[in-house]
Image (cartoon, rainbow, N blue to C red; front, side, top):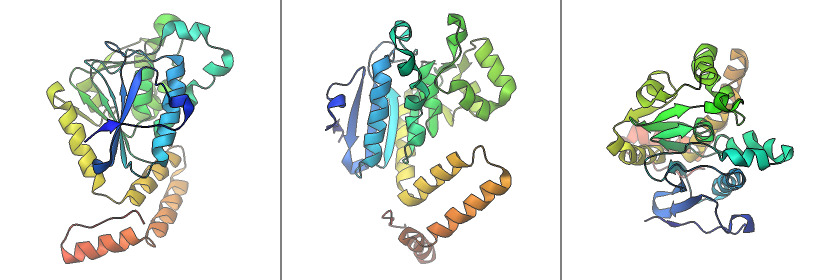
Amino acid sequence: MSEPYSFTDPRLATLDGFKVTIDPAKQRADVILSRPPYNVVSMGQRDQLRLVFETLDEDDRVRIIVLAGEGEHFSSGGNIKGFMEASPEHVSKLAWNIAAPARCSKPVIAANRGYTFGVGFEISLACDFRIVSETCRYALPEQKLGQIPGSGGSARLQKIVGVTRTKDIVMRSKRIPGKTAEAWGIATECVADADLEKTVDALVDELLEFSPMAQRTAKKMLNETDDAFLTTAIELEGLNYSRLRQSEDFKEGVEAFHEKRKPNFTGR
């Protein structure tokens, strides 16, 4: 059963616009944006979200992290007024904070429904899996403010859909429906709105069946080879494969395969 997460860091004593729960039995933590109806993300909230992901990454009770929004919208984006009030130094940290899910060694799932705009879209792009409902609308609307995305959105999006579609989305502040996002490879899966939580739960259960060491290795390797030459990527893949061959989990996986049973992975 989920319970509120207890933080020891005084900077997380009072969470700004979101809540965090943990279910130790399911090895799952949920980070839930909770400033309805649009779950607008404040400047200070970005700093706290980074700290939360770093904390959960160090917590051995947590295997999988789910990022979601309360209500019918994931997030309509950032607090516009906050950009004018923030110092240049603070603004320079935006992309680093929002990239926290990508740096986290554990799998992170974004559950997106309704408006998923601006920083809401950007932090979702930093996650490993994006499960969206048919009501989801992705957008980077900064052009309407005379700005461009500032938290990695255009850069990550271009890696996924290419420069032509990214220009179409960014330069026109275009809204992308959930089904289109799935077809373009932005979303992992698009489901009926009523099935969003059920689909996320099923993905969590599926990921828990794998070796946590192999999961961490796969995520790190794929992130680090995203910009690499093919020869470099293949070399790193081989090195990581060799390292995992020495693990207890690999030995257990091979034995379970031959014995026709479910493996009992321990992360060693």
